[in-house]
Image: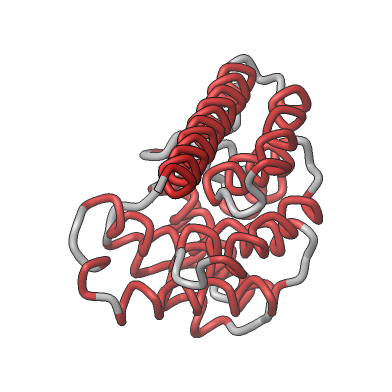
Length: 233
């Protein structure tokens, strides 16, 4: 009987020790995440990444840390590294539309347009098939952004008709007015439709305040001489 009581006591101690270790690990993970966020707020992305690296050594499947590190790498123009982290997120959870959006945007940056389009397609499909993702303003904005980025991919793949459909959808949703009209201008210019192209470029300048550059202004004669605009960032 005494042996049984002793064994129970030992097991209890091990259980308490394990629980404390888990609490310590959880606290350490949160601490590394908080430090990383503080560095990100200061624009110190390399330092942020070093703390996210430490976090991911403790928990390789921490989705927020992977997403944050991918954003930091992208801001440092390490697009391949960002793609690798977004791919890790998708391997853990294949139903995160934001991971597909951001990976696709990084594919655009390295001119892998077909892969970018595939990612945007997948994210849009996830939202359409999951009713719980179809409500909420933020997800509607995400869906519109996906359509814009896919339109850019279509444009670069010379699929002009599909590009027009996606970018027009964004224009009607009042998404990023200047760039939406600018891209519609580029698309129509690619089609050889100078009249509609210049109409969209004019909207981008007059309402969106976008600096169109000399080549477009010389074509459309939009900006009066002597007027200088700062480009939208």
